[in-house]
Length: 198
Image (cartoon, rainbow, N blue to C red; front, side, top):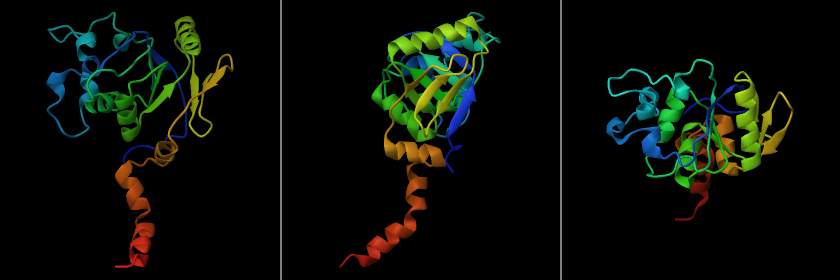
C-alpha cells in the first residue's frame, strides 16, 4: 500500500489563516534534493518555523503546543506557485492527512491526492466558521467523512460537502497510488489483453 487508507478522520486542527501560501513556503527549494518521501516533514514551513540559527519561532502556529491534530486549515489559494510534489510530501510526512481551504492550486491538490493527503475545499463562509471554532477552542474536533464527502464541526454539527474525483476517492479509500491501482486490477488487464486480436 502506498499510504494509509482514508475513510473517516476525526481530529483537532491546526489553523494557518494565511492566503496564497505557495509551495516554496511549504517546503523551501533548498530541501528538494532528496527523491524519497522521507524527512520532508522536518522542513515543512521551515522558514516560518525556525530562525536562521535553527531555534523555533514561538509565534508560528506549528510551534504552539495548544494546536495539534491531523488536519491543517489554510487560507484561500493554498499550494500555489511551482508544481513541486515535495510540498505534498512535506505535509504528509509531518503528519497531516487532510488540508482544508476555500481554494487549492490544481497541481498541489493532485499531488496531495497522489500521496494520501485529502484536500477538502469548502466555501469561504464555512472556512471562517472553522477558523472561529478553533480560535474559540483549540481542542475543537472535526470529522472528515470521505465516503459521504462531508466536513463537520463536531461541536455544532454544522457541515459542508466537498468534491473529489471518483477515481482518486476510490484510491484514497483503498490506500492506493496509481501503481497500486493498476496492480490491483492486473488480472482484469491480463484478461483484456488476452482477448484482443493480434
